[in-house]
Image 1 (tube, one colour):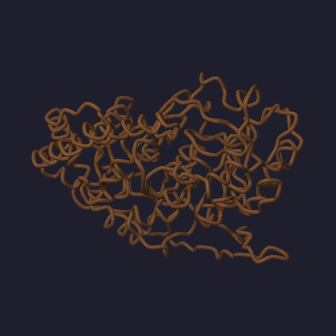
Image 2 (tube, one colour):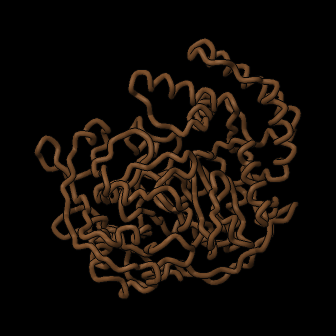
Image 3 (spheres, rainbow, N blue to C red):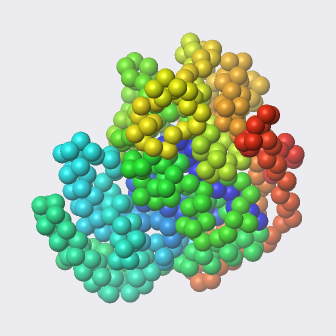
Length: 484
């Protein structure tokens, strides 16, 4: 059975959580591959809002298993807070439904202190990145220099606590000598992490083996990304990026499987653009229109950071960003969220390209300084006034809304499969079938793994067509029968 990779096609906060939740009801395993609790995925179930930072979005779907992969960096104290919070409202977060890769790396209290101290120092020179200060960058730094701690060490809680104490003491030298910041209490950190290890030990698994057995048993796996394409460490606008691989390739390295298993790469994009933190944002708006897109913050779906609570910067949809995301990730399908937010506007705009010093720019510049000097070239489309929250069939949308979606497809070169028309789980329009329902195993046993029997499955052929008069692939998927 195949893997479906779900990625953010913009700067993050695109609504991946609600798309992952929809897909999770149709797969057996949801696996997150990278990042840490700097991510924030919100899933709305009626009046209840689930805000997830580390645990995959499939956890709110009964019977679906969830895996935190080896490419993640995990603050174990925050993970326990998330587990306890979900358990308190009746969500099953037992080791039968949730697992943590033993190869994931650990975020320590010293990492948080280093993150905050470094960001404070950069701010003094006006060079701040705008991180979440959750210790993600320092944890990945420790991983790269081969001095980090891995989750598998929690199998021996006392030894793990000693390792945490040594790591914090080492990082305290950097905190005090370079940043002039107060040291972290290494003994207190060791005690807290030792107790956390005792609780989390039953959740540890060999993630590569788990993924491999899922494929062998005919399971469909949803690989859930965090952040967005433009925040990728390699392919984003450096240095205004996160510290992990947010693009589709990260699913393979962060979870440990090969590309032959991938059938779909689904990009999630808002019907407009947002970003948090510093960095270039060509279509950024200000004033009443930006406030209109952002919302007041009274609702869980308003444009305020799930993790930090910071107001997001808002702007019109940026087509070159979507084109770049399609190239980098090999997108086969798009999920377009929050189309309903545009209802009531007299006109809507899409940046179809840029100019740089008056000259047209064809592709998204990869240099942040160059992009900061680009001016968007807009196409203006008619708006619509109707409330579209109850629409479930594409042809029932106002004509202007249909035209907007079709223009997004044309500019991105990727078909729009799902359209979000409201915050609730069922407020979506599905334009064509994507996945086939599977029989899933209901639980992960405490010892060993059992899986549902594989069922027959045929993956449809997908074609890469050439654009008329050019050499660039259009990325519009074949309209041959799709998975349902």
